[in-house]
Amino acid sequence: MFRRNQPRTDVFSSRVYWTLNPMKLFRRDLLERLDLRFPTDLKIGEDQLFVGPAYLAANGISVVADYECLYWVEREDSGNITLRTGGSEPRLRFLPRMVDLLLEQVPPGPDRDHLAHRHLTVEVQQLLDHLVHEPRPEQEKALARLAEVIAPLWHEGLNDRLSAMARLRLHLVRHTMLDELLELVRFESELGGKGVATPVLVDGGRAYARYPYLRDPSRGIPDACYDVTRRLGVRHRVTHAALRGSSLYLTGHGYLHRIATEDVTTELLLRERDSGTEYRLPVTHTPTPGLGKEDDEGHYIYETAGFEVSVDVDSAADGNALPDGLWDISLVIGAQGISRAVRIGSKREGSVSGAAVTHIVDGGGQARAVTLYTTTPHGNFTLDIGERKHGVLPQVSVSTVRWAADAPTEVEFGVRCTLAGFPDGALAVHLEDGLGGTAVFPARPSGSGADLVVRVPVAELPAGLWTGQLRLGGWAWNLPPVPEDLVPAKWRRRGLPWYAKPAAYQGEAFALQVSRTDLVRAVARRLKP
Image (cartoon, rainbow, N blue to C red):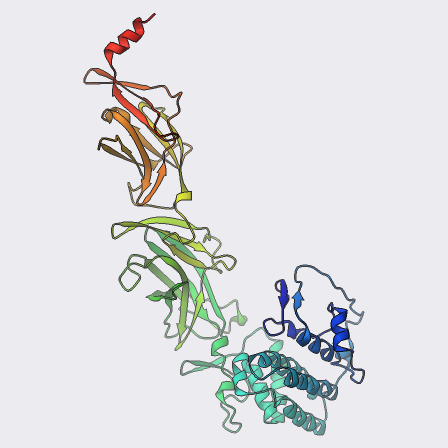
């Protein structure tokens, strides 16, 4: 409940109900309006009967997670009244009152279930931890009373909210199975001191935790009390991710915690964020010897958890090109008939960059932008097809225009480009003379300060006023004007003198005048006093 600031929330849309201690700031008028006071007839739990009604009656609850605005002092013995008060009886005095509070103030349904979850797990477990230390007659009496107290809150629909351990615990309480409960408490205590997760039984595409009495015919406890399929941990890591043209290459591993990698059926899942359209692609399963040895003290090994996959955006949609959109990338990790989907990228090798990379691809004769990037804040991989989030125009600019140092009759354009790739020759300067004449000059890698250069040999251009743009598919960038102080280039063509010089054309735009020198005028200018 303190992971993030929540300026205004309530008990039903947050986890605040899981903290029922009174170390909080209350508006006095709320307490006076409700006439809230601590009940004085309880040794423990009086704080719950104070905070619970305040939560339910408040117009709003604020969670301040990034600023320490309230302090309390720990006792030297680290103790408190609740810890020093033993036995089940004090807990069976306040718990029924909390149950009555929910029954009276919260109608049946998801809201009541959300709050009941807290008491059916936290309070029940704590009470049973004290129950094990009492004499047998008191244990039987307390268990019967506990079963009676929780009965109005529990129903089958709650099972989806509860862990398998909580479901099993409540089943044993509801059926007053004392001996089995005592064994379960002992098992939980031992489990808490181990670094190994409980093994599972896989059957019929479901996983069942091997808690006490699983499929014991003499107890008849339903399998549903042990079902952990939906709560299996999913572990994954991307070891390589690269976008090359229209193809995405991914390698890594993924497995279900505690499920041996047998009958592996892992697939790559592409899901368009807005439409929900999905495509599943096969992966190549690769060996991962020794994977898992560092977890659970090496009890679980996952030998075939690796995957390799190549995704061509021009054919990934059942043989067709993926439509424009944001395509989130997931793994559907499967083994032994169980599968779970998980977004990938948040866990990756240090050598795998999460920075956005954009490629221009020529799919079916039409250039499209494809960007591989990681989401914020989770860091998972997504393909942006069609510039939904990553525009192409800001990634290219013409930075300089000048005569080439090694070729005085070539105009050199310096191009800044952060695109990761585009088809050969696709990025080029396109010139027009206004009379139907055109010329195209592709960008090439630069050995100077710019990322790319385009060189235009003006001595090869016909006479005319040449203007143009830098183009890449359907994208275009204006060329900067030729500096006015640029010295005209001169050369001879068939023995006659020619020149190229900056020209004025529609304001701040590139224009270059290419002409043959008028010899009569040239001589006249020289003879003019």
